[in-house]
Structure formats: C-alpha cells, structure tokens
Image 1 (cartoon, rainbow, N blue to C red):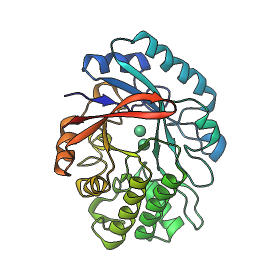
Image 2: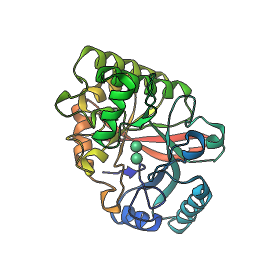
Image 3: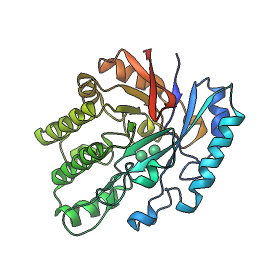
Image 4: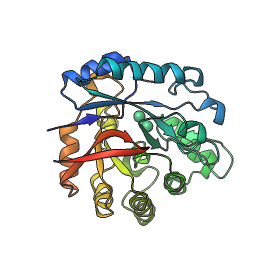
Amino acid sequence: MKYTSLHTHTLFCDGTDDVETMCRAAWEKGLAAVGFSAHGPIRRKTGLHTNWHLPEERLEEYAAEVRAARKRWEGKIAVYLGLEMDYIKGRIGPADQDIQELGLDFIIASVHYIDPPGKGGLFSVDGSMRELERGVREGFAGDGEAMMECYWNAVGDMIAAGGFDILGHADLIKKNNPDRRWFNPEGETYRRKSRETVRAAGKAALVVEVNTGGLNRRKTPDTYPSVPLLRLFRENGVPAVITADAHRAQDLDGFYQTARQTLLAAGYTTHALFDGRKDKRPQWTFADL
Ligand SMILES: [Zn+2]
Ligand SMILES: [Zn+2]
C-alpha cells in the first residue's frame, strides 16, 4: 500500500527532529512522499507569542532547507514544501498574499484559535484544558455550545476565504471535550454546524485530511475527523488524504492502519496521494484502500 506523509512538524516549529531525519525516516518507512508543514508564522499579524509557530525570521531558512532536502533525496522519495496555516478571521489565513506568494507545494489550513465575540481575546482549542476553560468562561460566559458554534463558523469562514489545499484536523474542537464537558457532539447544533462546513468543503473542491495526530500523541481515541463526520465528507464528494501530524520522525506513519480502517468505515474506497503542484494546481492521484 502506497502512503504519503504531508502533515509534519520539525525543529523549525514544535517538532523534535530536523528535516533530514524526517526525510530519512520517511524513506526507510517506504513512504512515497514526505511533506513539511511547519506552523506558519503568526506573531506579526496577530501579536501572539507562541513557542509552536515558525518565527517570521526563519521562514526563508525553512524553505531553503526543505528545498535542499528535495534535491538530496531526488530519485528516492518526493519531498514537498508546505505550511500549516492558522486561520483567524480578519487577522491571518492561508489566502494572505504573502503566503500565496511563497510558491509552496501545498498548504494545510487549520483553525487552532477561537476569537470570541465578547471580551477575553483569542484562545487555542488545541492547547491545555485550562486555556480552553478560561476562553469559554471569559469569551462565552461559560457557554460551551456557543464556543463550539464559533469554532465551526471559523472553519466555514476559512473555507470561504480559500487559498489552501488540505482541510486540517476538521473536528479539532473535540480534543478537549471529555464527557461532553462543553458541548454534545451528537447534538443538533454540532450536527448542523459540521454539516454546513462539510458542504462548503465539497463545493470548494478541497481534500480533507484523516489526521492521526491525536492518536500519535494519545490525545484522542480516534482520528480527526471521526467516522460520522468523515462519512459526511464522503457523501459530499470530498477526497481524503491520510496524514500523521507527526512531531517526531517515528510517527510519520503512526496509526496509518487505523486511518485506513476509519476511511473504510466511512465508506471511502480510495485515498488521495499528493503528487506535487503543476501550473499552480495540486495534483492528486487516488489509490485503493
Ligand atoms: Zn494543527
Ligand atoms: Zn500540525
């Protein structure tokens, strides 16, 4: 079975291995391609200081290092240059001109932050429970359902704004919701909001990732997205690409068999393989599961 691993993080952001180590591991694992998707720089546009984004001043170095690796590994494994771009409405997104002008092979777009309508300010849904708790309390007066709705609205706005190829961990919002603490993922609101998002993704001709990052980091019991949501993606004609959200070389194909079973359970018969970019368009081929 042929697989690729496009969603990866290195020492340039919050990964633990360098580009070369990741390339070698991907090749040793027999992957057809490895892509690099550092968390795109965020500080200048948002004022956020984090330890998990690529700093603005290292963007060029990052691109040069991945391009050099592509040359070194030519004939052995395809190496692609990408970014995982945050989307925060009115502040930052993959469609930003400076990002589009980088000439990347691919862009994964992800919502990690919620910008609440009330006071409180930006908070991450991908960080600690404590941060989320503060965000819900201050930004939504404790209303977790409203926070969840805000998340899906952000994903919808991101799809409408466009400028990317792969929809990143679509239901990341489920990560910090033990025992339905904030919202009911089987409730009417969740189903309606997620359905709207999936329909938009279908119209936008995107590819959704089946991301095993939550499994690799023991944060979720299943992939992003879960089977019911993935089934909706399939019904809306959205192809799926298996990714690991690998922060370590050893995870480059972590839980890929689980992802394959998840896709089969959602009714998919093929998965998408990235084959580079031609004339500014992503090239996808499809392999049987
Ligand atoms: Zn992410
Ligand atoms: Zn990631």
